[in-house]
Length: 185
Image (cartoon, rainbow, N blue to C red; front, side, top):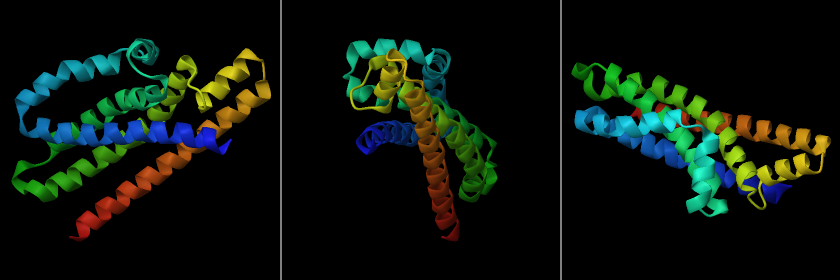
């Protein structure tokens, strides 16, 4: 049980972390360079529009199944973080510079993270199910379906919900603490 949960948790949280970091960095860069925002727009739009299942199947061609949940989670997290952070930067009053950026961007980033955290779990586990990733929660769900083990299916679903909610609470708490520490400077 615990190795299975840890396997999925590490990969999905890795994808979320990658999406968070790249989403914020590229949003900040795009907020300063309009040309970068224009160049990224078609890619972000495509990522937001293509169904998760299509990405999973396409990625199965190029990626090792153990990397699948990381990449798919990243793909689902990145547009939400990027778009929300960019919107926060765009709404900041340029005359107030850094203080405005911090206070204007914070609610947008927290909102984007809240949405993206749930999406990372849904998409990461879906990738594990479709890719039948060995040692993952998705594999356990797939086996439950194949062998008509309804109790196991429901139990693993509860595990996913608990992990997702716990991960969301932890990440949002950490972000709020980081913002509070930044504000004290």
